[in-house]
Picture (spheres, rainbow, N blue to C red):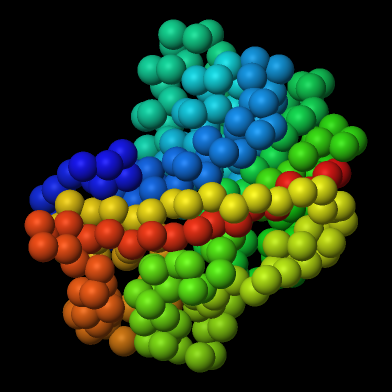
Length: 276
């Protein structure tokens, strides 16, 4: 077993609440190598004041807090934010530092007179690779306005398709989604997507890196639930139905099923460091 191969999880009802829980318990930890690589490169410590965009259920915030950072996070999913609050509450009580979480923009976690952030992250690949580039650039620009001059802003996305085994499964999401719902459809990352996004937000690219983030699951059921929890398949489910999406996703994952019943997909993620 490896650190990213998650244990078996009992089936749960397919609801927004269970999807958020699946993200927290199954999928989010797949990005731990990405979080760790960035935090190590930028020397996150007690001097760090971090703002996380699309913070999900708070695992990246928890890891930064363990390094001594003061952390704030925003997300559009209230269910994930509730889980992040649960995760961070016990850490806050021991450390004396209060993590702030907000639903909406950076204004939901900023306080009058508080020091500016000196690190901003947007780790979730779908936060950058999906949706409207105009909307994402605006969100980044608002976050950058709350940061110190020269502070790093980290964007993350998928690496080359040929090095991402999960691309085959994610293409199911793109194929089944309504073409008229282009902003919410998954699409593969282009080579310069992160740089273009940074420029649109008024940021200056200043370095990048690649990190191996394999997706490992204890069984096919956990793999399907984990992938569905990413949000990449939401538009496909709305355009067709969940049964069809689940069936075709399982078929796409089958080549990655190993003899012991586990599912293993090597992936590479890319991150960009830009400056305010």
